[in-house]
Image 1 (cartoon, rainbow, N blue to C red):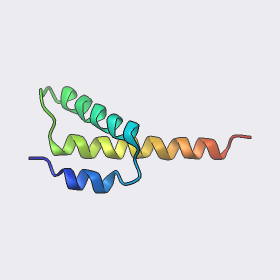
Image 2 (image 1 turned 180 degrees about the horizontal axis):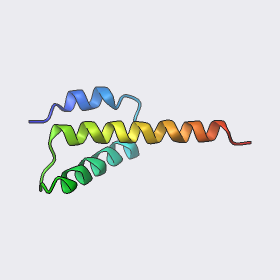
Image 3 (image 1 turned 60 degrees about the vertical axis):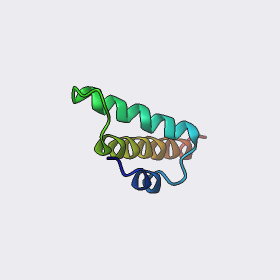
Length: 65
């Protein structure tokens, strides 16, 4: 079972596109593990990866002229 409430708490402030990316990343983690399904850990990793990407985008905009 997947604790979607935990995923939602970690993804606070994400928009619809961000949530779609979380699901896509979770799917990629499952594929890399040679599974045909996602587990909770895949979603948690997906949230962390998308959050890191959003943070990097924010840092890059800060340095634009």
